[in-house]
Length: 356
Image (cartoon, rainbow, N blue to C red; front, side):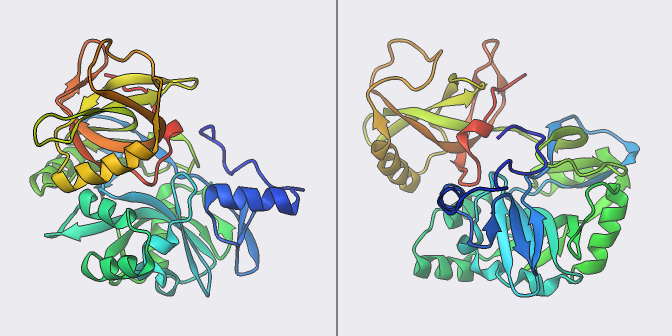
């Protein structure tokens, strides 16, 4: 789906069969009707979240600064009776987080749509690996047990709809004020606190506490669904990328999995971005191999990969993983990458080629 679209371009006359196909494709709940979600009898457009561009830390009176949470981006669609959690690639992830099913009880002036991040805390900090282990579960009893010992939390930072009325054309400073007035913080939901102007100091404080970095958002910015806008900036401590697994190399000795071959989608094909083997634990190694073997194909699924590599197996480019890396080589490939886990909330088409 192209960026910048305010809503999905589906619906409006689709027959029952087509509508069922749309629901199946998006894994959305029965309340979805074409490009809308029905909340309290009102049709609210299904939107993609606004995205940020990378930047270095800076100070500016015209910006709010808040923590960059290491989690899953999620829009929460709330009415008086229910909560629906939709990921950034428009999948219904409500079932994966039963402890958040009562989120609507913590928010006033419904129907409402919140933008935020689902996180799992370990030792007082967000843990992406713990969150990734939650998202990998599908059996209901395992999901329930995980919700008990690794509970998720919704960190809210924007309000897109209030009483069913859109707020996206209003400046962020007004949306933030409305958000603080409708959310009752508790075990399931917290508000992402922000400071104004002093971005460098705030960023250093985040890094010192072992957090991923900070976000900078213009106080007068409108909410632009599906758009990666310079009005919002991400200030990361380390570089990270979400890339598509296009193949793998078998390991040597005790290592079953040597490395993953990673690619990015340039709009027409997957292009090679490098390999990663560091950071894959023994447990992850077995789980990844099981998934990869189910996707194995006979020919290369990316272009530009290294020639003559031994022990290479190609797979359908359907799985996305996150890596951290030091920098890029002159050829635009990953330098010193570390595997951080699978991204169940992101599609391969969202993984763009890396830029220095």
